Structure formats: C-alpha cells, structure tokens
Image (cartoon, rainbow, N blue to C red; front, side):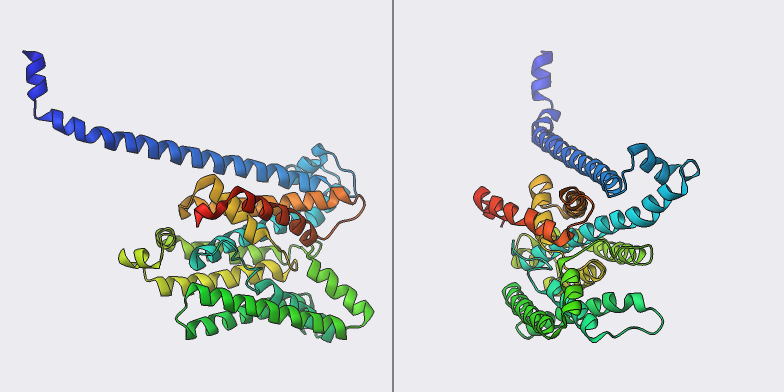
Length: 365
C-alpha cells in the first residue's frame, strides 16, 4: 500500500521532471570546474615561466638569488637587486602584459569579425605601428620634454590611425565583418609598403635601428613604460566586462545575437576601438610582435570553449605564456645575447597554424 501511495503521490511527476535538470546542472558544474582548473594550471605555468625568464640571462644567477631579489630584497646584494629588479623584472612584466593584451585583442577581433585568421597583426595594426616608429627614427624627431616617448608615441598614433582608416572604410558599407577584413588587409599592405619605402630611404645606421625595432624586442622595457601598458590593459578589460554575454552571443551569428537584444553594430564599433587601444599600447614599446594575437585565442578556445567569461582570461594567459616562453627561448638559443622576440614568436606561430589546419579547427567556426 505504501508503495502504491508513493507511486500515486503528486510529487512523483515533479521528481521525474527535475531529474534531467539536475543531471544537466551536474554536467554544467563539472565543466565549469574543469575550466577553472585549466585556468589555474595556466596561471601556474605563467608564474613558473616568469621566474624562469628572470632567472635566464648573461649574468648567472641562481634561483635563490632571484627569489631573494624579488621577495626578500634586504637579504640580496646590490648587484643582484639591480639585475633582477631594474633589468630583468621590467622585461618579464612587459612580456606578460604584451602577451595578455595581444591575446585578448585577438579574441575580440575573431569574435566581432567571425574570422579565425583575424588578429591585430593580420589586419594591419602592427604594420602601422611599425611604420610610425620607422618614420620617427628616420626623421630623428624628438619630443621636447619626453624624448624616450617619441618612437612609442609615433607607433601608437599610427596604430590608432590605421584603426580609424579601417573603421572609416567599413562604416561606408555598414560595418559588415567581411568588409572590415578586406579593409584591414588593404591597410596591412599599405603600411608594409610604407615601411619598405622608409627603409629604402634610410641611411645604413638608421636602417639598422629601424629593422631592430621592427623585429620586436623586450630590451626597451623599463619602469617608465610598463605601467602605461598595464593601465591600458586594465582600463580596456574593465570596459569589456559589461559586454561579455553579448560577445558570447555574437558567436552565434549577427541575426541570432540581434534577436536576443544585442546591438551588433554598436558592439562591433566599441570592441574595434578597444582592440586598437590594446594593440597600440602593446606594440608601441616592444615593436612588431606577430602571431601571438592569432595563436593565443585558438589555444584558449580549445581549452575552455566559447564562453567569454573564461575565454578572455584564458586567452590572456595563453598570450602571456607565449611571450614569456618566447623570451626564455630567445635567451637560451643565443647565450650571452638575446634574439629579438618577434622572430621567436613567428617561429612558434607558423607551426601552430599548420597544426590548426591539420587538426581541422573549422568546426569552431
């Protein structure tokens, strides 16, 4: 009788209906924990690479010396403090910030354009920054009160100008993704041609300085410019926070995103402006860095999926890991010297692109 009453209880249908919901909730929580664990693992890898980057270099410092210089400066000698805190730490922090900026900028570009090949590099922003820096080096112009900002500011201005140019041409045709991509490619070739012209006109010693800047190097990092990149990254990240769900919805397509209340055009314009600022600040002080903004988003997407709440942090970590790892590799390959980091990131990025092709990443798009 008890069994029959339980079978006929009005609560049984509710139990049947809630069972699938409970199972789905368990699956969701399991996936969320797995994504958080991967974020924590990536953060741990980044921390280890940052310590390794500070550890490597011409001066043979031990791990204990580095840790004392970082966390217990009272127990470290003056030479160690100078090497660790004044020379290597700014370079490591700059590599981390530039990698995070380019990784996040790459995610935004690929999201708003719906194109797996979109990045600040492939759409001409980095080429424009390179032209601005080359022009400043060629002319020898110097700011009257802040001469160390002359080349970075010129690169920053040209990068923003390139973004404005792409925006202007795209706006004529309604800010459609395919038009933005075509305008970006045209901008890339235009500024690369301008770079070549400046190099052709430069004297040999000036040409050497231009080429070194275009290669990309962390040797320009200092306590003067690291805070600038950090502030730009922090402000742009705060500006993105209210739009995370809209960016996730945009991956479903313009029509579906608009159907659930997303102002697609306004969102695309705002994110495009933020990408321009991120890229300009990132490359202004270190030179042209290729492939990080293209590769890091794809790695992050494979690890945590499309939810922008975890995709953006993971892309930032992957970009920072790529830059920090490239910095370590550039010092290990050439003992006593440093290979420009832009060369190393390109060497890492090209094989990864072939890997994406062979793996068939088209299913994400």
